Image (cartoon, rainbow, N blue to C red; front, side, top):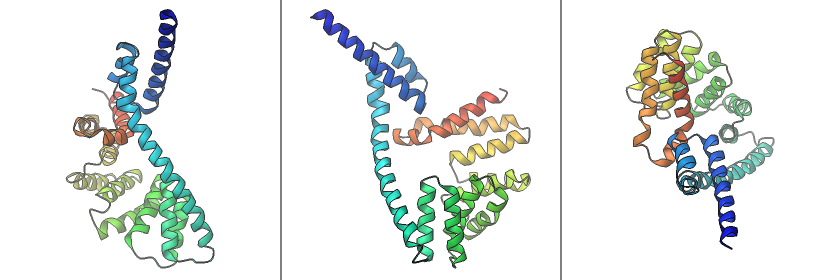
Length: 248
């Protein structure tokens, strides 16, 4: 009986370690967790990892899935509604929902419709500019992002200014880009803006400064609550990749 229990326990331990490692390589938390999973007394390390790192991710993912279901249902409703009621607000809401789903081309088209119908608020212009930028059309993004920044230099928690600076950089306007990056970074702590500025510095042959800004992204991690660190992981990975590619 003892032998059988040990065998069952060892198989469960191995399974837990596999699950923990799969989650680790998908989500890429701190590398010291890899050592905990492999070298802590098995399967204790895997259990600790799953409780501390995987369980909160599971809860967050469940919430996202529920919101995604509701969002897709609302999209279907609005897609039907705009055929009979082409109100500005319907197209703006549809564009927002498309963006949340990552459907940037549809979102851009919805904001085009909203603006064509007479929308004069800042948000549809800003969001259309964001869509254009991430669709690889920074030149088209610039007028919309400039409108947002001119209306409010702090728009979207300074993200508008950071994205406009990035659009300037992508279109070769490097002096304007650097000036706007430096102005926005006096107040903004967005990792996205830090790394876009670092990209510009790399292009200008200033790797030491680029390393400083990439390092600033990683330096924020210790002071963040766990949920925020999980959301910032893509930026942390991008910062680490940049640091590995730059000369020390």
